[in-house]
Length: 120
Ligand code: 5GP
Image 1 (cartoon, helix red, strand yellow):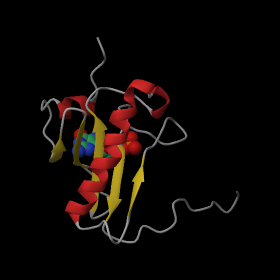
Image 2 (cartoon, protein in one colour):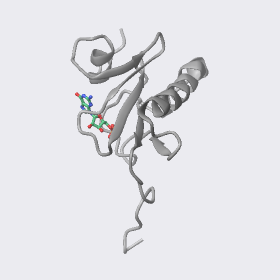
Image 3 (tube, protein in one colour):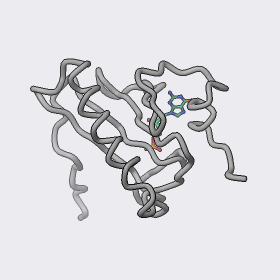
Image 4 (cartoon, helix red, strand yellow):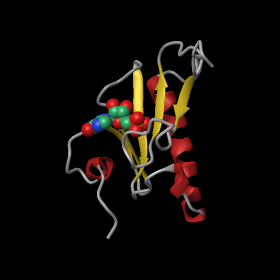
């Protein structure tokens, strides 16, 4: 049996969340600690721990994440100004929850993606 995750419990309705979209492949809900005016997490309904675990069978699910992110950006009124989609992977990617998720972030200018450390 595949291990449950925090996000699979949200997908299944066992933990409350502000779900803004759900279909047979993906679920989207607002981040509990929003860093931008719009901060939505999009997750596959099935547990895929990280991008490293995506297989060819998951192509339609991964494509759906982008299509739904585009729709939600429209719904949120941020599509024209632009936004950022982020998938963190693993330790160096600072991934906190090991159920693959895409951050949809926008509603203000987001600045450069990463700031260079003085020592780099
Ligand atoms: P990561 O760092 O893994 O890419 O992002 C994990 C995200 O999940 C964080 O932005 C964090 O705020 C969010 N998060 C953690 N726990 C919960 C929760 O219980 N509910 C919701 N809606 N978001 C959560």
